[in-house]
Length: 246
Length: 324
Image (tube, rainbow over all chains, first blue to last red; front, side, top):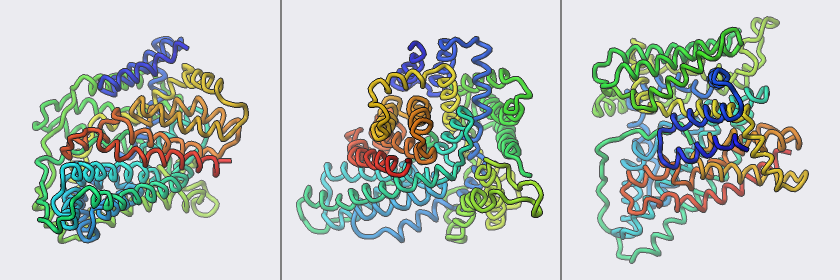
C-alpha cells in the first residue's frame, strides 16, 4: 500500500502547481525507494525507462519542417482559408473551426490553431461578428457563452482529432509504455485507427451543440436587428500554449 | 534494413545541433542552461541505443535524466531571441505560395502512414532483408516523411540552407520548452510505478469492487477510472500507466482477451474526457479563459462538461462493442 504514496505526490504536486518535471521526478524517485529499490536501481529504472520511451519525443524531428513552413506563412494561409470557409452564424463559424481543428490535428498539424494563435485573433472575432450581424449587440452573458464555446471547440477538436495521427505524443506513449512493460509489439497504426470512432462521435456531439448555440444566443438576446460588426481585437502577443501533454 | 535506432540518432543530432545554436545565442539570458538541457537530451537519445540493447549501464542515463529535470525544474533554461520572419514577410510569402504551403505539411503524415501500412513487410530486392525494421514501421515512416517534407518545403520556398530550417525549428522547441519532455517522463514514471507495484495495488483495490468476469463492468471501471484519475492529476498521460497496469492490461486484455488496440486507444480517449472538465489541466481550460478575457474562469469547462460526459458514454460503448 505504501507505494501508493507516489500517486499522492503527483496529485499534491499538480494541485500546488509545482513544476511538473520536478513533481514527476520526485514521485518516481520516492516510489522506487518505497518499492524497495536501491538508489542505484532507481537510477537504472530512470535510465531504462527513458531509453525505452524515446519514441514519445520523436515528433520533435518534425519541428524544422513546421518551423520553415511557418516562416513562409503557413499560419497566414490557414487564416485565409478559414476566412473563405466560414460564413453566416456564430454557431456555424465555431462548428467549421471544430471540424478544421480536428482534421488538421488528425494530420499531425496540432500546431495549427490553439487559443493564442487562432481562437483569440481569428475565431472569436469572426464568431462575434457573425452573431452581431444576426442578433445585434451582444450582452455580456452572450459574449461569455460564445467565447467559452470557442475555447471548447478548440479543445475538443484537438483532443479527439490528434489521436487519429500516428506520431502524436499520446499514441506513442501508449505503444512505448505497453511495449516496454509487457513486451508486446503494438504498432501506432493499430491505435490510431481505433481513435476514429470516438473522433466521429466528438464531431457529431460537439458540432451539434455548437450549432444549437445560435438558438441559445437568439433566446438570450433581445431581437434588435442587425447591429454593428464587432471590431476584431488583436492580441498583443501570440504566445504558444504548451500543447504537449494532456 | 533501416533501423529505428537511426531515427533516434537523427533526433539526437537535431537536439545537439539546436543546443549548439543555443550556446552561442547571446539573446538568451540562460543560454548555457538551455544548451546543457537540450544537449543532454540529444546525447541521451544516442546513448539510449546501448541502454536499450543492454550493452551499456543504464544508471548514467538515469543521472542525465535527473540532471535534465533539475535544469528545467529549477529554471535554468530560457528562450533565445525570436528568429521568426516579420509578419509582413510571412503574409507576402503566404500570398505568393498560397495553398501549396500545405503540400509539405500534408506529405509528412501521408508518408508516415504509407510506410506504416504499405511498406510494412516489404523486402529489399525481392527476397532480401526487410526494408523497415519490424515493429517500428510507422516511427520510421515519420522520420522518412520528415525528410521528404523538408525536401519539398525547401524546394517550394527556395531555401537552400538547412540551418534556416533548423533555426526555425529551434524557435518552436524553445517555445514549447521543457514541456516537450513531460510525456516521456510520465512514461518513465509509469514504468517505475509498474516495477514498484503501484498498478497492482490499484488493481487489487478496484477488482475488490468489480463483479467477477463481467467484461462490461470492467470496461466501465477502466474508462471511468481513466477519466477520474485524469481529473485528479490533470493529465491523462499520468493516469494511463496506473489504470492500464491496474485494469486495462491484466483484466481487459490478458484475462478477457480484449483487442489491445481498441482497449488502449479508447482508454486514453476516456482520459481526455477528464481533461476537458478539470481545472488541473490549466493550459487547456484556465489559460484560454484568461486569454479570451472571460469573467468566469470555468466558462470553457462548463461549455465542455456535457460533451465530455456524452463522449465518456460513447467511449464505454465503443470499447464494449469492438474490443471483444
